[in-house]
Amino acid sequence: MDSLKIFKGYDKVEENLEDPQKQQNYNNNRNKISKPLIATISIIITILFLTLTLSFTLFFHHNTNTESQKPFNSPNSIRSICNITRFRNSCFTALSSSSQNLTNPKTILKISILASINQLTELASSLKANSKGNALGDCNEQIGDAVSRLNDSMSVVTNGAVTLTDGEVNDIQTWVSAALTDQQTCVDGLEEVGVSLESAGKVKNLMEKSNEYVSNSLAIVANIRHLLH
Image 1 (cartoon, rainbow, N blue to C red):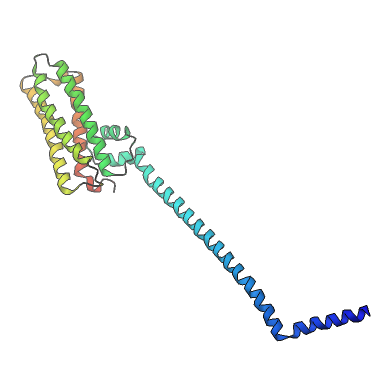
Image 2: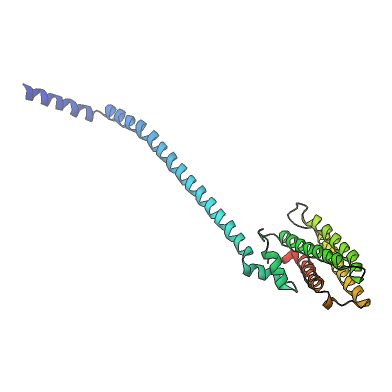
């Protein structure tokens, strides 16, 4: 009897599987389960793909920026920039002493002009200390004018804009050139009254160094449009 029941149950299974309507319902139930599962998996894969793509893009962008900035602070890059100047050693000393990224021509010009101002200020102090009624004191006015013109240039270079306009470049060239002329006027005045810079020791060195720095600043502003190319 038990074996007969088993066979009867088997017949029912066979009947269920052979019934088209029941088979269709079975397939529909499977589709209802599999479609949401496939959709969920697709969404997860898409999110992972987008996350990896974004991470790679940010990583590549960071490395590109880092690599593009580092070379401009290297000694070779600074020397390359200084090739446009007449006094390359002084240019290298001025630019390499700064910790700022030399990726912007305005920054390079600012560093050069600031170094020139510092040299001229030291020169003015030395002239004042050594004046004592002689002709060295007469240079103070010219050096003071030179510092004033360079300060005018600095006010433009540090105005917050990314680049300089053509008018601003022309103004800075005029001011830096005038500062160089003031220095030369000082030297000429000393020579006229028979004062030799050879005998002035420290004053002579400061005069020469400040002249080199200002001259380099003039070369940099004159070539600022293609300074990093």
